[in-house]
Image 1 (cartoon, rainbow, N blue to C red):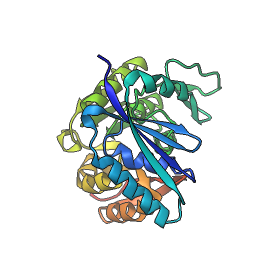
Image 2 (image 1 turned 90 degrees about the horizontal axis):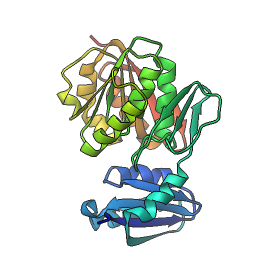
Image 3 (image 1 turned 120 degrees about the vertical axis):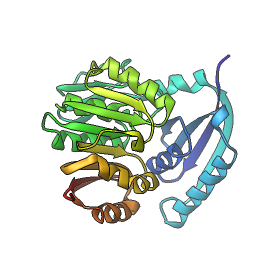
Image 4 (image 1 turned 30 degrees about the vertical axis):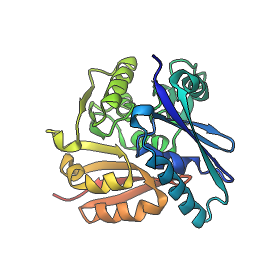
Amino acid sequence: MKEKYFQLSISTDNQVNDLIIGFLSDVGAEGFVEEEDGLKCYFAAGKWKSEYREDVIRFLGHLKEEGKIGKFSTDLTEIINQDWNMKWEESIVPVEVTPNIAIKPSWKEYTGSAKIIIEIDPKMSFGTGHHETTRMMVKLLEKHVRGGEKVLDVGTGTGVLAIAAVKLGAAGCVAIDKDEWSIENSLENIRKNGVTERVALSRGEVASVAESEFDVVVANLNRNTLLYIEPELRRRCRKGGMLLLAGILTLDEKDITGSYTKSGFTLIETLHEAEWSALAFSYSAG
């Protein structure tokens, strides 16, 4: 039997897809297909809750109050997996994140000149390289991984950042995620990229990571989670090490920066794309 899904279609008079994706990914949306006038969002029937639509309407109302959109509408339909999965696969194309790094799905050919090719089959998860937060994190990794580093990837998702880190020269990466589905997907991608010996993957929270003194810690999550796990990230970062954060709406950047600088981190670089921010800190506390 084919698995049933709910398709939540959202139309707006101004393109705010990235904001909606960031909002809905936190409540369990498993995939998105972007369109000219809006977005189609997909939830497994077993994970759908009726209040999600109400939450989206409140969120869109907030965007309207801020002047980001004028009009919006939502529509909910029930479909089967095959109906939208094919459309989604067709929408995923290779992305050249930097002149040196490209991310591609296995079913598409990359013909550019990037030397590092990361093959990711996301299966409706983040980490395809199409989202601003992923691209910015890869750019920060390219700048701050110079070879031989010990890396921790918190909330690895598809495993794309862990894979990027070791392909850029890191000695090894510990990658964790609390979602079983993400662990299965990232394991497949880690194997596909031939880096199983350098990426240690496990399911759990950052508090479950026994190791400490990582040279580079990365976390592409969301505002509330990043604020909550700050003490755990601090304990895993060695003195003089780097902390790279993303998944942050620009309007939340001040909150994140303030919290982490109070804990001994020094902000050294900020990247922006659309409504998103990525932050690079160095850790100076003992």
